[in-house]
Amino acid sequence: MRHLIFFSTLIFILACSKQPEGNIITVNGTITPHELGRTLTHEHILVDFSGAENYHPESYNQQEAFDRILPELQKLKAYGVQSFIECTPQFVGRDVILLKKLADATGLNILTNTGFYGAQNNKFIPKHVFDMPAEAIAAFYIAEFEQGIEGSGVRPGFIKTAVDRKPLSDFHAKLVRAAAIAHKATGLTIMSHTGPALPAFQQLEILTAEGVAPEAFIWTHASDEKDWTKLVTIARMGAWISLDKYGWDENYLKGEVLIYLKKQGVLDKVLISHDAGWYDPNQPDKAIQPYTPIFETLIPSLQANDFTTADIDQLLIHNPAKAFTVTKRLITSSN
Ligand SMILES: [Zn+2]
Image 1: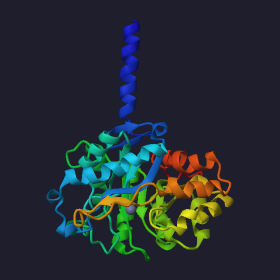
Image 2: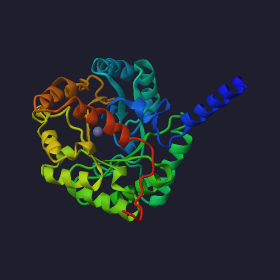
Image 3: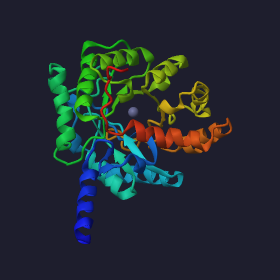
Image 4: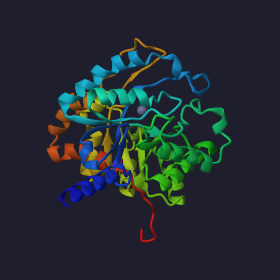
């Protein structure tokens, strides 16, 4: 009898651990939100700027990429980082086998994505995608979620899409609608490379029309919006504000935006990261931008401005866990 209880408990645990709903999907399977820990929410391991028409992933040296990136990831251990969200979409350098090897070598939880990247004038979109209806694009994302990516068995932990830094084109509006449809089917969070507030508001309108709540949306590169009141407005709508350029601007590392957002009481909607790193197969000798300025410079500066340990944990632990938990966030009739 005792054995029976033991085995049925074990089977129950195994069954639960496979369930994406309420959990987080890494390249090595599902973990609980609690297991995510300190997280960098927007970084890159390999980026290939060739564009969809000239994209030849088989031609780069995966071992060289691994060897160049590994020491940069290992530096994160000293800062207690447990999880790393890799935001490079397909046709821009997504290589889930490389990510898996790096996750195994470092013990980091690494997340990858499904989705098409429309920014930079659709350079990274294969021709056949332009005429696909939103439903067919969504079906492709859903298939990667259900069956894994390119036969690897690795599943996406979120949807990544991208629009240009101007009013949405019809095609970019379609990409956003596809992401909304896929969210309703999978519960995957939508991370959208956006920049200024205008296309962020437009995307939230599309999500609302599709019945998807702002909580499912990460306004990526919100750091590019200079009118900080817009960050507060969108945070109060419920969307995630991604300040992800901490690898790029010395001045930014003083933390002024975060100090402002804390005063406005919206720190619980903010994600921070560097948007750094990457091995570029077209420039293999280019230096890898470090994944550490947040820990070396930003956090000490925030602490000097009365940020508590709880505030830092909010940004690096609790918000990422909530933002990347797989769950359908729909607009219900009561709200
Ligand atoms: Zn990025």
